[in-house]
Image (cartoon, rainbow, N blue to C red; front, side, top):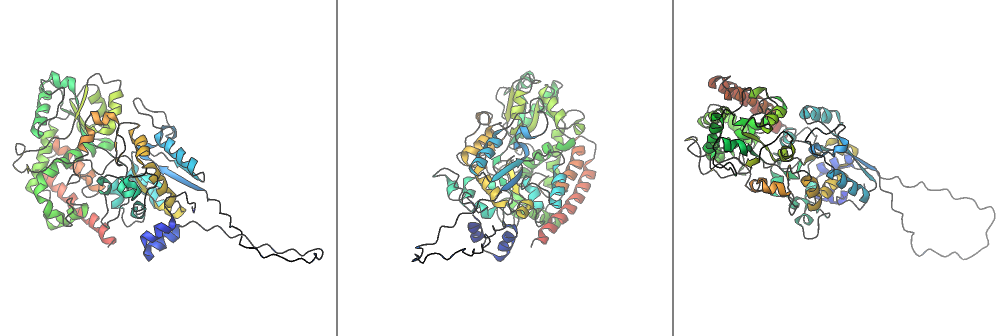
Length: 529
């Protein structure tokens, strides 16, 4: 890996690290030096040569450069794995992908000593599979991951600190691009959203997603909703009125996924949006490092201090607001997985569905859909929803810090000595042209690199506008503490929303889950201090 074609040189990397600990880590992952050629013994002459004046050489012959070592990268690209590698036929309506293959092939053409193998992995059960691979040392070199999972794993040695690479210039970027100053400067600020408590970044966010509400314009018109052609409710209560109008013509307001692998998604997206409005005036209480966003360690401390609890007024009001929304879910919502939820909405069985930009292409192409599709972003809350709401809370980017281009370098890359090449390939993949090619192939996310082009559909439906808002101050409940807490949150709040669990039982169980999660989260932090 000593080829000068790589933008990440080991010398620059070591200079940036500048500590004995970092040097020790890098020494462990450095490639083995090419052995010097063995000295050849001089042959004895068969006869004495004629005497002659021997000229001294004027200079040493140039040393021949060593051939670059072969480097094989295994890459779990998540949702961006090219379709030819997924090992199955595409499902109906599932978009084909090939852009990352084009980019990888171009990189390998410029770096013939490098091979890149895409490693498809199903999204279901991914956390468990990932943990098994990382524990056993069999993880791919570059791996798709959720950002909060990376931070939960801090101290396990599974993920590589990306800051030394991000500090280097990305000379693959065009002249004049901010990435030429440093790779970090190529990205929008959301790239830093998931910095760990040690201040470092362990996951690269190359795109941004957004969630909001798709709606059936035909059903809206049938229900007498005046804004059917271009709905965007002024506030939360107007959206609730949409649900009531749809219920009045015997349709559920929302197609709701309350079961299966997606049980956390809609529930925690909505509860996270509500958190900002009910806890806005508490930010200064929780946010001890004054970065504007209480992190999971600060929330865990607040739980132990009693300033964040299941029974505080703001929390109770937030959860009651969730329950009011549950009145407009379809019958049997808690037993429906994502596929059943999508079918309900796309066949005209519900007026709205909360989901993300990544579903746009599938929704547009779905043969079951015979209505005009619309989308709007989450509306603001006002005191008309609850006296506990802070009306000064600004509109924010709910999905800031999330995307599909979410990659980390693993301990496997360190042990195999591929980490420099992996980082170089990610640099190459995140130039404005290349990230635009990868991300815009399917209108499912938005490039997180400056000057990258946008897919026209993401602009038309308004996704691009909402990602320009500042980051949301509160995480969703599945990221607020840890994944286990998120699952437990769903297990009690979902049944509460549909009347299967009374409020006091729900709050008591939720407090117990909070207390246990706070202990887990703070234990992780303490291990790394």
